[in-house]
Image 1 (cartoon, rainbow, N blue to C red):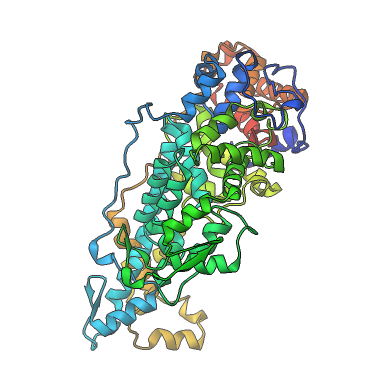
Image 2 (image 1 turned 135 degrees about the vertical axis):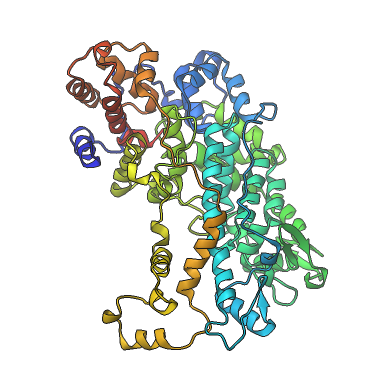
Length: 612
């Protein structure tokens, strides 16, 4: 069974589908969006409005979906109880989640890690040592090699460990008993965006995740201050060069433009004055510090207020602005409900947040309990982001763990979202940016890879380290350093390359790349490389399905929030009949696992599966 076979099947079953308003299938009568008049109505729905389908809608949006049993528990509650169980989760135990296990890659000598390789080697040349290693005597060829190796060691080590942090966080999203906590942490990661590619310290990224979880549904003002004092954010937006007399405006600008108020609600003078208020803010290792000698103590005028403000004062003044509450409330709404927010609805949402002193839980409860949330305008209006998509897919399949095959990080990167490495301080664009024709096909490939894992991927993937592996292979085969680090076959090298290869060097970065990965991999705790433990045969038997038609209907209802057309449903039944040679599941129970996986792949490849 090959991916191309499945792609062909997908093409025959679903190629004509597009993101259009779906027609209700007779096979899924439980799909029940509220009437159009409910749109923008924040009135709470009543117990009479509540049913299994709306409980499923709530769990998909406020979490990462779940099994029919999970949905049934919510459906058995009143709508108010169901919403409170997700939003007010502090009393729900989560002790089964394990803290991140560090590989032991970091040590104190890396605390003041140089900003670049030239900075590392130049500093070591002046001092005779750097990052805990000494320079070799100058009479030795490549006498700076230990310093270059050490620099590249940490670059490789923190990148590899960050991948483990991403896997660990994905496991928390899948296993948590508080799904909204992790969903909100994911939202804040895209809102207060920082990237390990610049921060270059997985520990700071891990600390930031913990901050997002701790403040996930708490007070936005407290979260804003915590993020402003967060080491990853301080490094990412250049706090180290924001000093008295030479204020750097990066953080001050982004805190207003992206994090709190939005474009057009402040002046350039406000940016300059806010930057002065944040001068001297920095970090030492993982601790926030203020350097008094670098902080501007002079009077500032910011958003019409004048005083000797510091960064906390600036944030508190920002929170006093009506536009701040509206900006944050609308962004939360867009993440959980739909992209379109009218000015009137945005004002209502902002009032809820502001009247509750920026406590997020009342806002979330109002959104999730409203008629608007369950209206026809909101159903099928949310395009799942890559991380949300993968975790939801695993939830739907009943997987207990995030598998190592396919690799979680590579999977979400292929879909457009590299966890812990957003593309810019603006985070990810969300919404329709997640969907292109190529990405729809890639999402189908992802479903295939989980359902039919590639056996060749059960060993640790080394494709990211091809250059380092090539150098290492040559060294192990007995090449000297000059030959091992050659850019190509000597017969194909240019005269420039030959001269560069043969001259004496202070260090060679190709060797450092290899050594860096080699030393990091010696310590790195390996990511489990198993496949997803799922049993679709048992799932279908437990559902009580006796025929192929009942099996397909069960899978459609379990996986989809938006129904497919009757023609697509019938095509899936015909395909399963053909693969099994019968419509009787009892007859086929001993060999129906792969055909069920094929049908599941086709369902998960449809445009309808990408939205909820």
